[in-house]
Amino acid sequence: MTKKAIALLLVLFATVPAWGSKRDQIERIQNATEVVQEILNVPENIPRDLLTKAECVVIIPSMKKAAFGIGGNYGKGLITCRISEKWSPPVMVSIKGGSWGLQIGGSSTDLILLIMNKKGIDKLLQSKFTIGVDGSAAAGPKGRTASAATDAQMRAEILCYARSRGLFVGISISGSVLKPDHDDNEDLYGRRIKEKKVLFEGGPIPSASKELIRMLSQYPPHL
Image (tube, rainbow, N blue to C red):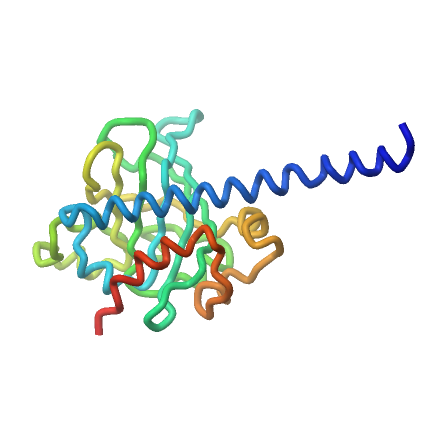
């Protein structure tokens, strides 16, 4: 085999993991889009008025229970934040933590976090964000509106929902660590990005996430 042929093979092998990783991020965005669509199709899932008040939404599709330890959980997904009346391009994130009391059956769970203000997000973008420590958290209220929410829920900075089978239910996940996944973001965007700038200032929206952004944009900010 000639040196030229060997060099070509090396280039081809070097590019396969990168493309495979980008496909992973696109598939994750598509799964997150399906989760949001299913939420919006069932009014009893998450109150619509909470979506109009949320500053950021975190979507973790198919979070897994870890094979190691007891009650460990690990998942990957994305976060998008409001920029005026629009939503930012997605930033890929990961979440992990101990037992969350996910006693709703199944080994795979869809997780939704509504971040009701941007306090503490800076810490997430710098390193990591511990739910319940860097931002107060509560199980999210259910129903078509948030009128049944308790004072504690409405004061919380993060409202948490999970679904293993059927409808979403409010859960508590305090102590779980949420942080940006720099490698996944590089795979998606093809370069290192500044996550804070993407979430707070915007930029080109990956084609795979346009439907997700469109659906969230149906709920303009509550003034």
